[in-house]
Image (cartoon, rainbow, N blue to C red):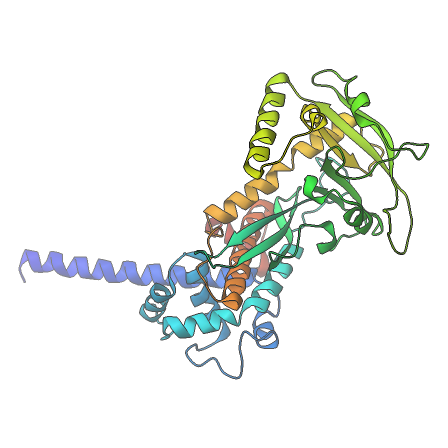
Length: 401
C-alpha cells in the first residue's frame, strides 16, 4: 500500500468517525430537547388534532416534531426541510404534505407554549422590585403575511419581569384590539403596559382579580376624578414640577357613561416624571410627525403634556420615584419582540393560508419559549454537589443552552 493510499484511508476513517460522532451528538441533543417539553406532549398531539388517524410519512410524533422544528427553528423552507428530513433519515415527506401537517399543529403548538411559559416562574428573589409580586410586562404586536392581500395577525404577549421569560401569549386576527382583558391575571400580579391599555375595562379586569396595574397614560386617555368627584385638572399639577422630579396625586376612575353592571369607583395614583428639555423636544417632534402623517391637528395641551411621563397605578405603597423606575423596565418587552422578529424571523409570515399562518406563528412562539426554558434551566442549575439521574440530564442542558 502506497503512502498516499494510507493517507486517503485515514482521511475516510476520520470523516466517518466525525460523522458518527456528530450524529450521536445530535441524537443526544434531541433527547435533551424532548426532556424539556411538557409532560404528555405526545398524547396531546392526538388529542389536539396534530395527528389524525395515522402519521403516514413519520414513524412517530417525536420525528414529526423534529422535522417541523427544522422549518420553524432553522428557518428552512418547506422544500429544504423535506430534503433535510429525508437525508437525516427522519421522514420521506414532500413539502406539500409537510405544509398540511403544519396546518394541523396550531392548537398543539399553542398548548405546548402555554405549558412551557407556566413552568418558567423562578423562585421569589430578594432582588425583586416588588417583593412577592409577579410583575408582568404586557404588549401587543402586529405580524403580517407578505403581499398586498396578506392577512394581519395580532400577538398578545406577557413577559415576566423577574425571569424575562414569556408567561402568556395569544395569537388573534387583527380585529382583536390590545387589552388587558385577554390575559389570565392572577391575584397579586402587577400588570404593566403602555398607554394603549389605559382604559377602564382593562383596569377593572385586573382589579377584580385582586391584582394591580402600572399603566402609561396621557391627558384624556382615561377619565380621572379628584376626591370631590370632579374631573382632575392634571396640567396645573404637572406645571409645578421641576426637571427630573417624580410626583404623585390621589385620583379615582369613575364609572363610564352607559356602563352596565357594576358602577364601582377605582382608587388610583397618578405618578409623573418631568422630562429634560432634550427629551421633551424629541417627544414633541414625534407627536408632530405622527399628526402630519395622519393629517390631524395637535392640541396645545398635548404638546405641553409631552414634557412628562404620566403613569397610572393602583399600587399605593411604593413612592412615585419607585413607580417611575419600575415603569422604565417596560422596555424589556420591546426587546423580546425584537428577538422574536429578528432571530426567529417572526416579522414576516411565509404562509398565505390562514390556518397555516396561525400554526406557523404558534410554532415560532413555541420555539422561543423552548429556547427560554433551556436558558433558564442552565442559569438555575448549580454545578456543585452530587447529581441524581434527573439532575444529570438537566445538567447537560448547560452545554446545549
